[in-house]
Length: 290
Image (tube, rainbow, N blue to C red):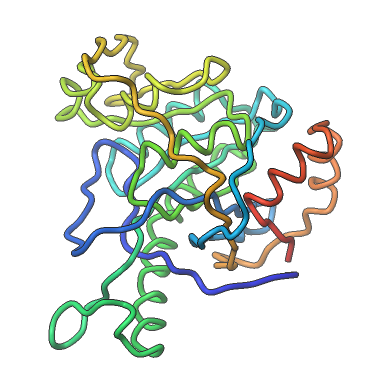
């Protein structure tokens, strides 16, 4: 890998309306960028990103060229509605030659547990921080593995995008123009269905504020929810600016990474963006192969 940095994320991810944010003390930063992992025939590797202050001034980020229509993005988390959403997407939207992208948002870690209680990460020793981060990475691997196995059962290619952010809705909305997401599936639990219909859930806000080119599907109890959320009197939220942060990526392999040279060449041919747009996207993601 050409450049590598330590992961600053941790904790359980929160990307579906059936999940709980968890009791994490303190307050976190804004939404982050996206880490990417790819699963070929033999295994998967995951890239995670951390937030860093951007010394350069803000610049506009134009959406890249459209991805293949068969690509499907599914938000996943700890709740059962995530698996229902993934199963629905695999049955209804994916094909054996499709690429399915699992999107998982996890909160920014500012405190770590110690024998004396929670301690600010900045005051903990490097060994304490590393131990806790490794524990959280391991939990995420275990949680994501069931989704990866489910995708393999359907014989589809699968990638994982890990986003470190305390603002789940914004994090997902920011991902859409970066990868020109055209099909996005989110799960909502039965207990949150009433809130969804009022537009007061993560899924409802994402569907309400997603670009027109992105078709957002909401799944509850294995079925698509076709009811359009009612208009909210409050103004629609806007994604946090994605250009006031630059992001670095550290690898967190779930299993040995396969050879992706052929896929990378195909992706480059497919995304015919102009040089200026490509530079902006690269600056935002800072993705390096490894």
